[in-house]
Image (cartoon, rainbow, N blue to C red; front, side, top):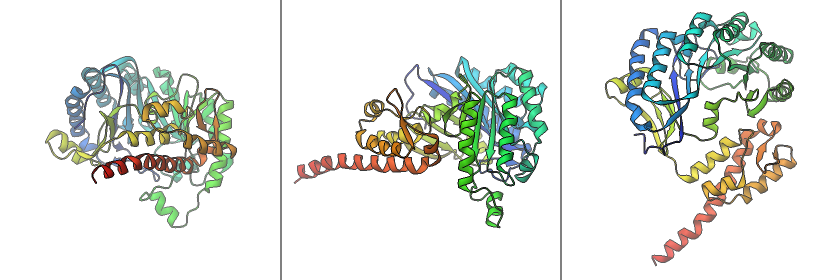
Amino acid sequence: MLGKQKPAGEKLGIYIHIPFCRSKCDYCDFYSLTGREDRMDSFQRALLAHLKETAFAAKGLSVDTVYFGGGTPSYYGKKRLRELLAAVKRHYRVDKDAEITLEANPDSVDFKSLKALRRAGFNRISIGFQSACQAELDAVHRPHTVEQGDEAVAAARKAGFTNLSLDLIYGLPVQTVSEWWNTVEHVLALEPDHLSCYGLKVEEGTPLAARVAGGERILSDDAQADLYLWTVSRLARAGYGQYEISNFAKPGFLSRHNLRYWMTRPYIGFGPGAHSDFGGRRYAWVRDLEGYIKGVLEGGRLLDSEDLIPREERSSEYLMLRLRTAMGIEEWEYRGNYFMDFAPIEERLREFAAQGWAERTGEGRWRLTAKGFLVSNRLIGDLLERQEKVRLSNLLPRVQEKYQGKK
């Protein structure tokens, strides 16, 4: 199911999806559940079994990132989290300096629990702070207060976490420009090492989508764009470099696990709905708690989807994912890995540069600017279309030659 093993020496990431939440936020479309605490122990047994049975595929590989996401992993309880991390370390070859991240909500952590998790080996924490305005938190039914957010940061620092990230959302209902400015200044005073700043997206099927469909107004795309550009500038002045569309970090504090996704490096996911990219294949587990538990413990259907990724598709991923980052793309990296002509891509990038959407660095790499990030979906889509035309033009002579050979 997992495909061929990767060459020895290549680094591997592990993602563990904890789908439980105390409450569901109005904007959230991640796979998460409320009121299912009764299934936590069964889910724990399934995760432990799945981690153990999958370890053979990672034999000889060094794990340098482990990420507990959700849902709300901190709501799962420190005992279960410690047990899971111990199992990862027991069954996989985890580097001594591996980045081990825990996502947390302010209402489900305290100093005692964080101290225990830090001692267990968690060394990075990502807290869902979201806003420093209580009215904004209430508007989307966040389960915590601003004061709890401040207290969670203080508790994490006291517990020994020296790598701390905060998540923020701009464009929340009832949010004004000045309130977003206040939120940014508030969190800068807390001195996090990393910040993730996301523009609000109204996802289909969420309570927020129903509210907007009913006439509730939120900030326009243009207003969100202004907040984004201001944020990029303000965080740069505060010493946070932008290394991806929504992510900013002090030197040395880039999220190594998230970079793995953008750099198309291998990772294995566990938990319902978790995705993996390993052994030349991309696959995902069923997006259903009961289905996942049954699939692992009783041998039911566990795999939701699986795809072999050909080199042509990897070249598209390279453009799509790398152009989300400040690193961007480079001609000989592209030519050498995918045997594709870079000239049509570069021609278009030069046109983007004339619009202020892209730039070429001193190292000869091409990347999108902050303004380019705002319209990145459109720009990257344009480049992918050009790439496909090049691929088809290269394929046509081979098809014609094959056809003529049969005549």
